Image (cartoon, rainbow, N blue to C red; front, side, top):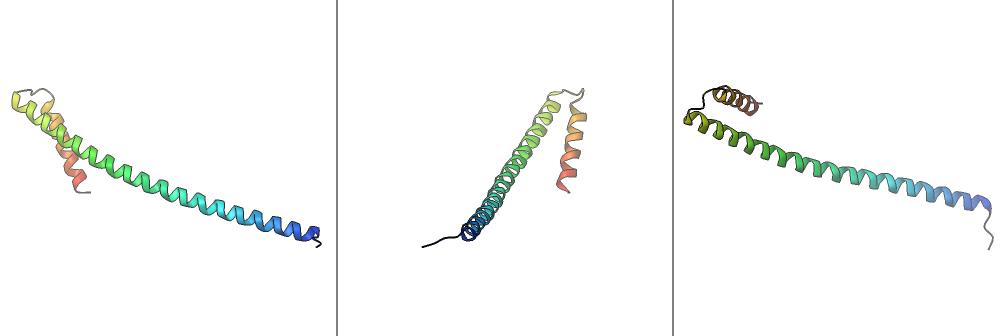
Length: 89
């Protein structure tokens, strides 16, 4: 059985092309998985930030009820305004 150089070069080219295509598909697959993880992390962070904002609002409200009136009402007003604007987006 005789294999000439042209056949070896063609087989090598096909193997290289198949490897490149597989690498590209694998890279795209990994990118999609990364995007899904990032989306889940962003959603978790948004929920966490919402909880922190509402907790901060409750703390500022409690301080106002205790009579801390220096900058607490201003901070509470700004936070309420921010939360209201964010809720309407």
